[in-house]
Image (tube, rainbow, N blue to C red; front, side, top):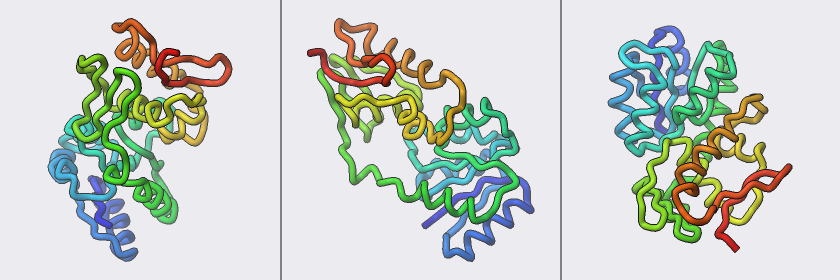
Length: 225
């Protein structure tokens, strides 16, 4: 497995790189955000470990840029910021997980293993569809009734999860776990806000709604009956 570590603190970077190499990983390291972006954008790594605060370009900027370019490499943020809003910001930017500093190396390895075990896109459907709504996972393109719909990375991931579970009622907890990788309740309305944004783009401009609320249970995506 090939891992890219983008970390400007020399001591922390050396600790991570040495530990990973001792575990048999191939590790690249960048100590500057812009250099890290160049390496990350190549898509040649299995996991990216990205510090939130970096010179040149911060971690959020790196991840937003590569997600916008269609790079789907799993990202683990390292951060000293423990606030819920900071964690949400990292995941909103396209990160997949976060780890607070200081951390135990065993936990870092566990987080990397969990990210690496996610099934590659090649083993999955590349086009998801319900009614006149279509998502092309390769081109990262969403259309409805032939009209292109522009989605932010987190909106895309939310819609992808709903499409993969067409007709099923999906709870808020399931969305937090599978779309935001939260295994706790962040006590925010992040799910409701994104469902509302998605409806504004997917349903509101068209004659029929595809996203439905089941009161007290969750949400479902299905064609009108």
